[in-house]
Image (cartoon, rainbow, N blue to C red; front, side, top):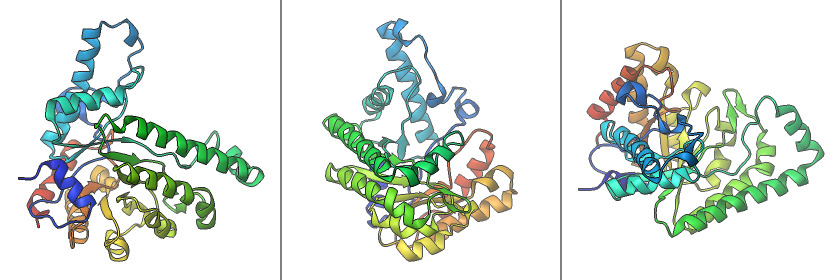
Length: 317
């Protein structure tokens, strides 16, 4: 029998699978409701250095146990590990503890993007002006950021902890990409391609995440050769059937159950959204079932569980 990790890798490589479609979520924030514990990425230890070595070890083990509990209860094949505030190298420490407890059962990843995302409101004007006034400087910064990420990945390779990286720079709004397709081709695509190529060369898998309407830059994203594309956002008009038709033979697709419906729609709408993603994502393999974003704070837990009921009944080859 294949492990969850092996099934996840099989889907990423678009090889045939039998049984149930793999599933994971980029983040599962509802750990207090599900397990009575704070999600590890929301924890901050301002006095970490004052803890004894034993207490530090117990805190890391507890964080690891939360990630394992999520994967076990909700049948996730992969775990995306986020750091704990105030704890140096916490992602690696948690990953090491998960491996200690579960071996190679789950696919482990961390954040590994280095490309330009949509700037925050406080920096948006300055960033936009710099695109015009200092394009050479921006490209130099992009090269440096990619080099830093690649160097970190190379340094960690011998640890054997990570299976891959989630590339979580967001490029798009609901109306389309923040940068025009031409500017995206100049300021993002070359660096994303370089990053993915380097990761592939080290044997890592890459999952490119971006919300919003990716359709004007979809071909560019695919040309960069990530193993998978997440989240295929239906709130921005991204249609699983259309993306599957255009690029289902080139990379794995992850998504695209409508998060807005999970939060505010009817049960019937949630069921229909889950069914649509499965019906159009599954054919031919190369598909991983997921929401169109994550299980975020404020989403009713029972709606996520309703989505999983559909997956368990209908997400089988």
